[in-house]
Image (cartoon, rainbow, N blue to C red):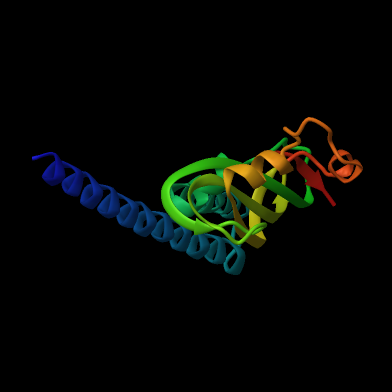
Amino acid sequence: MADDTSALVTAADAVSQLLYGLVGWAMIAMGVVGLLAALLRPDRLTPAATVAALSLLFVACGYFLRPAGRRRWDRRRSISRFGRDRTVEERIVRGESHVCVDCDDRMDEGLVRRYREEVLVAGVPVYTRSEGRNHYCPACAAGESGDRAAPTPQAATERPSTATERS
């Protein structure tokens, strides 16, 4: 019974993501059509400005209704951030088989680091330039994190693994 429920929940989530995406893109399309109508036929300034403002609102709402737009919004930074930004996120994985990037050993648990380089506008990522993941076994992860008794000079100059860096 629990498998049926989880299958139903998974299907409902998939349908929800699809519908949010469709509604988001429809709102973006309506906003673009409204903007074009306001720009191509500016007979009177007040109605054209009103249509343009509502169209921009439709585009913004459509962007954030889309699942990808919401994920980007969840990764936002300070509103004063513009330009390229690098981030590294860490999480512990268990039950997945991967190869450690340092020692090339097979592992079933360890640490995964996701790195991204994104372009920010007012703190919101608008474009991801590069993204990747590195998997580490527990021994290599402990060695890189600085949990060793005597840190090396190289480890002291490395940036923290959860750092956000601006270039």
